[in-house]
Image (cartoon, rainbow, N blue to C red):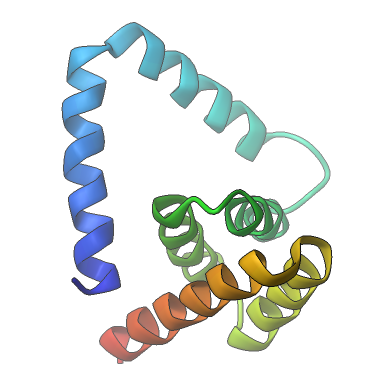
Length: 114
């Protein structure tokens, strides 16, 4: 399945989860919005932190969402590569593999946007 397809499928699954446990998911949404809307870091910088953690924690849906969010925040492929290099340095071999997936997601989404 394409990365875009994976993102769409995850969004569908999350909508069902949000309907099933609205109080818990509303709390998560409130936390997420508070983090993004406050503090000295830009959205792009915060998304880089989130992507690095997603790669290190090996969360494929998270990687896809944060790559997409970085593109919307004006990130560049070169910046993405630098963040992935740091994640690899911190996480070793497994992070190398998930970094390759993050870059492939970027390339597919960028190609589709052209």
